[in-house]
Length: 190
Image (cartoon, rainbow, N blue to C red; front, side, top):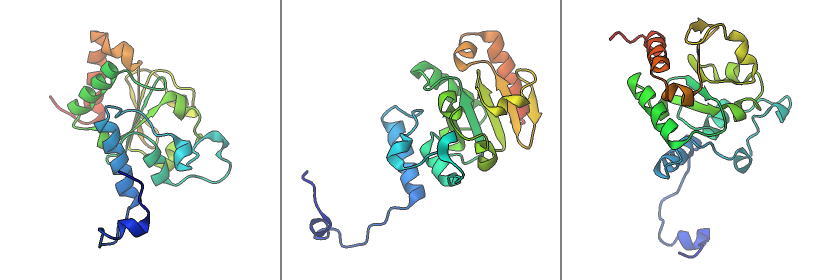
């Protein structure tokens, strides 16, 4: 199809066309899921959003942060994983974990440690999560709350530190530890 300008499009589009920012974020999330890139983050430069430490004094809007990352953040859950991306088998493992606690990608905000480490230290305060789960090592001030792995701490939000997802996916005792902690974090009685 050739590129059409607004005059050409107006010949067969009789109603006004409006794109709402929230709908665009949902569309982008659906496209990532459709393309099997569900856990890949957007390119922040293409959206003009700077959520890095170098952003200066102006804080980005909460909706801009959410739109620039994977997930819908409907339940206020932030999941941070070690590294920049997740391999397909680790993605599937994470989706199983989320399903076990009655969550899906639309309920969480998924951030790779490589990206999270470049965000301003106040990003969690701005996001105001209910729960934060950190898989692996992250070089960020949030690590000050880490005491023991698989122990839940309430620091204004509930935070759970666990081993790296790759390590957990290959280790049955770690899977059991994680499941026990997640049952406590999500108040699941089984």
